[in-house]
Image (cartoon, rainbow, N blue to C red):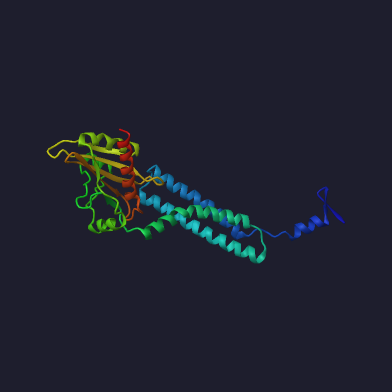
Length: 272
């Protein structure tokens, strides 16, 4: 038997398939919608931070909202699979797509949470824990840092660094300071740090200093760097200090930045 429909014909078998086809799970649909919305909000937050259109705390608030929406999307996704398992509704692929997007968005915060648990709470690191290099307080340096002045490295953080990052040691170069100075500048240039102040070797002690700013990859938050060079009996001692401007936990960024500088300085030395 066949029925006519709009000038065509609909077979009994086709109609049966049409009638028994299960609808999509609403939870699956909302999982994907919320995941896409969360990614869009996170993109806006990252753009605001990268372009410095708002202060860092405001951009973090936008990102926090995106993560909250992503968590809700994840709950919808898991509930969708429960509903699909029990009722046979469609939408497993839609829910899975939403969960994949949610997982991609939450991967970075999850990694940072692990780092926060694994590493001590500190946002300042130095190769010299006895006499850490001071950040310049000249008007030019303060203006470049937006008026931010880094204080002393807390004693508790020094002890934590000794335990967690024992390999962060002063860099000794078998060169006099006049030869070491251009190598340090070349290393900073290769790392693409923004130099805000230089003090070439000179004065009674013959020291040199370089102040720079590095920006985080994802959000572009500024971190402050100071490098101090001191002559030492036919050698040059290079000490570097890196401090995050925001937050009390750097998630290991500053020690890793110091290690990158030491590696790049060795590269410049090998290329002489």
